[in-house]
Amino acid sequence: DTEVTQTPKHLVMGMTNKKSLKCEQHMGHRAMYWYKQKAKKPPELMFVYSYEKLSINESVPSRFSPECPNSSLLNLHLHALQPEDSALYLCASSQFRPGGTYNEQFFGPGTRLTVL
Amino acid sequence: SQQGEEDPQALSIQEGENATMNCSYKTSINNLQWYRQNSGRGLVHLILIRSNEREKHSGRLRVTLDTSKKSSSLLITASRAADTASYFCATDPSGGGSEKLVFGKGTKLTVNP
Image (cartoon, rainbow over the protein chains, first blue to last red):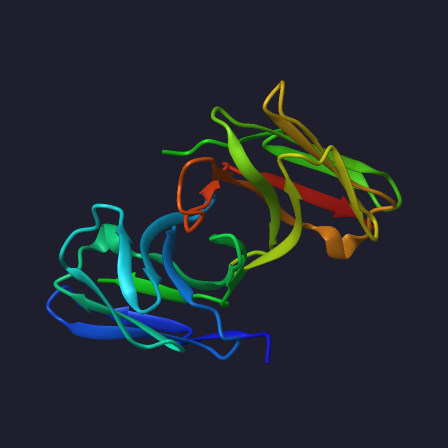
């Protein structure tokens, strides 16, 4: 299985809602990532989990809360979002290699989020 | 902060022609990667070239890396309509834990049938 899956594909939520995005991979990768991508822009890194521990937080507002329950799952909890948070949210994973490096990232198809 | 800058921002060619995209970056790197993204979809890894490599091939793709100029190019030969997508370079900066890639702004390629 060389796939990263994300659910849901589309999400519409109000500013007072609480929702979660889910990501799953079964490739044995030990690094998992959340990216935010606005239209016609490159992905912007939000969070990195390495061996189930948060290793990078790119100064993301606290209304985004990541969680890594186990080595295969990654969640992004959303609360009190703003309309400007509407974007494509991408999950990715990569394998840790001998020598202490990660290499190519495998991306899921993304969740298209609309905040009303 | 973004490190890679692709050039051109948009490229439109006819099927069968070659497409060349360039990427420049600012700091030392461990490797440079190219990704493709079809509209509204996830990114797909195409090729990785390490800092000690100068050229790499994969099928119709050819990537070059010039670390002295801090630049890379992606050549797609004999393009097809299915190659229509956005292409991003991404650098793995030296000195980091290699967990983080820095993506460029991307080149939007349109291949006309």
